[in-house]
Image 1 (cartoon, rainbow, N blue to C red):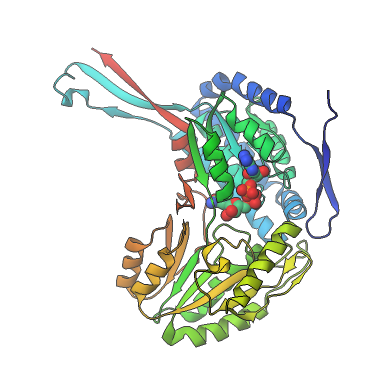
Image 2 (image 1 turned 135 degrees about the horizontal axis):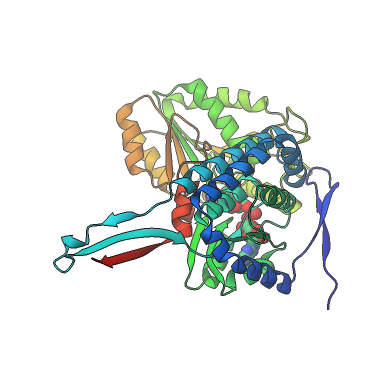
Length: 460
Ligand code: NAD
């Protein structure tokens, strides 16, 4: 038998050791799935009352350790502590919303006698758990994105095996302890640790009934090739856009754009990457935006004032820097930033960009935003849609007709009027179109995917 591979989780800000974990072997993955499968019936048999109690208790336990969880997250993923605290508070709500949904999970009656041959029959369908779920999660929201898979799985009555990003496993290990304390049956939440190999062993195991993935398009493509015939949901990337027309409240839009583009160094799937501004307001917006960007605070993520910390690793910082250089050599102007100190990239604002540039057409996942003037509102809508992604978009206007046209035309999972595309609360349906994903999260909607309909017909 080979030695277990123990590796150290390093803080992306200063490379200090945050913890140690053991990488899962193939046998570990198989055992985890077998344990989860063994409690399938136990989970399915929990009453709605019991599922609600476990989820509410988990929510309370998370609420009681906001600071501890936030600090752990900040250390393992470099997220500024102010945003990490916000994430923990959102996870408190995610579990609470899942508890509510557990209590109202139900089916419907079907009037079978509406069919010629249905006379004398009573029909109804119910929602039953899909079975063992494999969840694979990214580095950037180590608590709340895990909560968006684990909490609905519990509400639906499904055991779940999670593979977090190997750079950020510690928060999910802490969450497993919390769920045990909350009374979740042993075996119902398993964690396996590792990268692509461990992920592939997990999703190709025949006992897995559903794959719930959040991450990048490239990995989603690999997973969809391996998934076979089973339920799969994908929450993927984006290059979110904002439209600011001539009737918009400019000051409000400036603030939302600056926070939306640069919070957590842009490592958010709905980070603002493209800002389309009506030409008559372009110069005024640009000036106010650059003044606001100048006030952003870079530094140690554990410092309360920090808004931009390090990128997750050297490779991410190098990739972003090379995309900025590529844009510059193709004619883009750097209005702010453009440089980096180690893994921390300055908030960078570009103009004179085009769709051939990676900073525009791909997901940058870093602190870079593009300013683009437009002439007509229709042109701006078409430009937003001219992307392989379609997660969320923000439209700033005081013209109701334009707002409603945007709602109709934009090919995205969420249209936000006079709000940043980076806004999200946890009970709403959240997800994208095109390469931004398949399916929606938010406990009520994830539970729909984590359950199957069972039809019952009774001949009276
Ligand atoms: P990633 O795609 O590199 O990794 C995601 C997960 O997939 C990790 O756990 C990784 O170990 C695993 N993985 C890698 N190769 C695999 C394989 N072949 N089979 C199975 N699993 C495999 O993403 P990341 O860098 O951790 O996170 C950033 C990405 O996540 C961005 O694209 C971002 O937009 C996206 N994201 C999307 C949402 C959303 O809700 N739509 C939320 C957060 C992040």
